[in-house]
Image 1 (tube, rainbow, N blue to C red):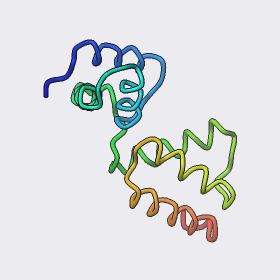
Image 2 (image 1 turned 120 degrees about the vertical axis):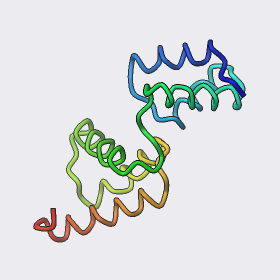
Image 3 (image 1 turned 180 degrees about the horizontal axis):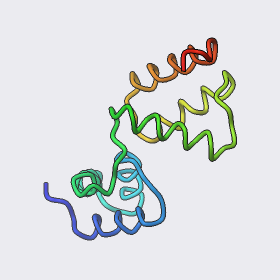
Image 4 (image 1 turned 60 degrees about the vertical axis):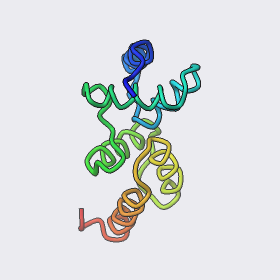
Amino acid sequence: MSPNKDAVRLGAELLAVRDYSEKEMTERLTRRGYSPDESRAAAARLVELGLIKIAGNDREALRTAAREYLLKKGKELKPSTLSSLAAFLARKGFDEDLIEEYLCEAAEVMRDPERE
């Protein structure tokens, strides 16, 4: 299915305000009245154009998103923030296994800061 040009245009306008993951963009466009198929196609087109940079299995994008979340919230990486961080990363559309792997690494760093 080719993407609806209006959905792609709206997606680009939304991205001018803030970053969205492909999953978030699909959900946003669907809420704006586009069909799920149109929304997925438009989000995929925005990824092809390089406007959406967050991919579900991109390790570096996950690390960057986690860092930005912690900075924005003014939080340090500690056990009490891991569940909210995990929920945020899941909403962004990152792969569950990748999130789990990142959180395990983060927990190791918290136990042994020399590992960083």
